[in-house]
Image 1: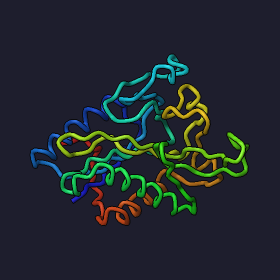
Image 2: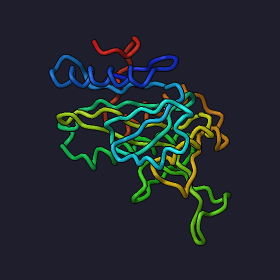
Image 3: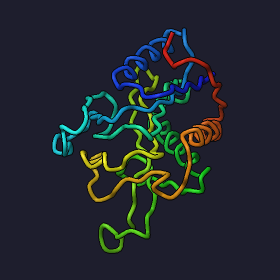
Length: 228
């Protein structure tokens, strides 16, 4: 069973890390189920294991958290849905690349609920939206904006960290970093694209997309998400 947990309000990043560590340990010792944990964070930047110092453009804007997830710098904040993914990748074939592709497919399925076409680009982590109405970064190219980020870590084949989708964050907050090390493309959100959706709308779409991609219907559980 995959539990589906939603925390109200804003969750501090170190609190979220501690929660994930505890939950992964409980999954590994057989005392807790796999889960998806939905949160929002206060404004902050996180640095993955490949983060480059030069990509932190404004280090004094928000608190910066070093993490052990893959990837580079990203922003989290209100109006962005973060889905932390604690799943047994070992039981799902022990194929990390395929697992990441499943996470990408999950985001794409979620966006499709709003008639958006999310796309994957070789060499560029995350999910992208084509913006033909915007100036191209280079002749012959189409402008693209990032709408979702992906970064995970595994411990004995159980995943943690996960995905984030921009619903209605303050996009100017991304200016303090080079998101995921990519300078030539921008960021967008569902509301920025003209879709008046709520976080609840996105959560429903995420649940349906998860069932579609992973073939399992997550089970909502009550409570604030703390592992017991």
